[in-house]
Image (cartoon, rainbow, N blue to C red):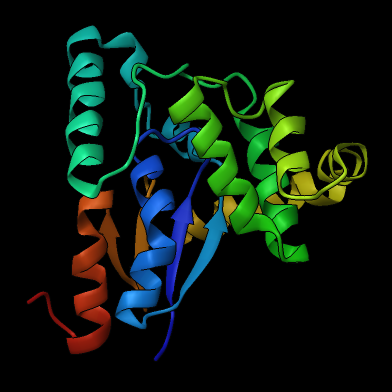
Length: 199
């Protein structure tokens, strides 16, 4: 079965819910996903989209909503988690490098686990190095490569590709140009892949 592009950005809070359950969803559904990191902050700035952090009522709702949905999925969560992230771009550059080298999914899952279950902000030290060590990667090597102009430019290119696909937030699922935004649209995206409609 053809894959679904999973556009995500470490820094997106609701992406925790998707990242932590997607491996089991892939296994049970038989639908493969291509994990594609991008810089959601770049797109939000372009859209003049003010983050939740400056909207206290909406921020409180977001944390409670994530807490409810995590309970629904049986996921542990400790909210509020540190937010927003100071080093969003670097966190996603590491993810992009990891996707190219084959350890990206493990890094993203561990990063979100440390962020949303232990309260350690993703992309900052010591969390960044800890997440890499936990999946068997050498932080010095990874951070040197992830901080290179080549990977910086690659993340910019992926962000442009996301924009061109109509992606405006994370998580987003792209089924051959049919865009589904939000963790709660994951099952709709799978249905579209299978049937060409939401069932």
